[in-house]
Image (cartoon, rainbow, N blue to C red; front, side, top):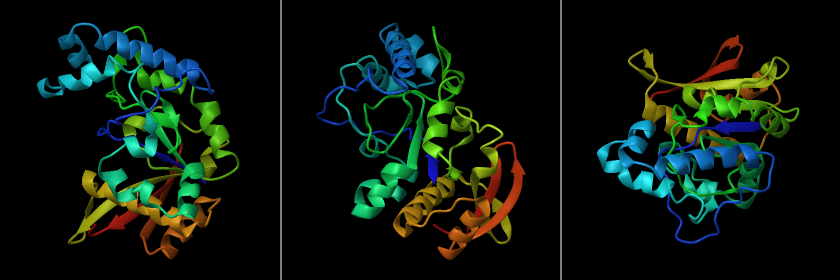
Length: 256
């Protein structure tokens, strides 16, 4: 089972650690291209950088940090990403067996790194998935050209559980052969019989759901088996339509 997660806007700044390795790995060149484009932008006029990145006047420090990406200390991704989903998931508090499963089953999709495992060292950054960088173009289009062989290798013959937001779903789309083994999860908040998607419930529930899967340890190889597994774990689930993105599964919650 491969669980695809979105990144978080909030990130922790590690106090020490070596800079990110941009030399090794299948995405080294693709990452270096984004690094260079982002650093070049943020070393230029600050107003231009902030406008390009969609930042407000109180976020100038993010631009200055981006300009130093090549020298910033790094730390495992599970310690960098914060926010509602990752606060609910609490990767670093998992027991040994669950943490080992997290290391092999979770992949985080990132504007700067493409895709990273929880234990991979990254430096904090500010780069939204909808940004277009001078000299590079849209980061989503850039990663669509590079991620398929990497994500497909991670998935192997197992199920892909796609928990990405729509922005990061554009970075990689499953090919026809893999679509039958993909489930996309939508969280619906139900109040007085009415259901709607609420960002906070969506993110927190996805974090709790992934933690429950990791602690349980069972694997599911088909969408139907995944639905049964979630039901066994106490979640209210409903299977939706199968589309070009995979089989949609709705998780219905009334409270956190």
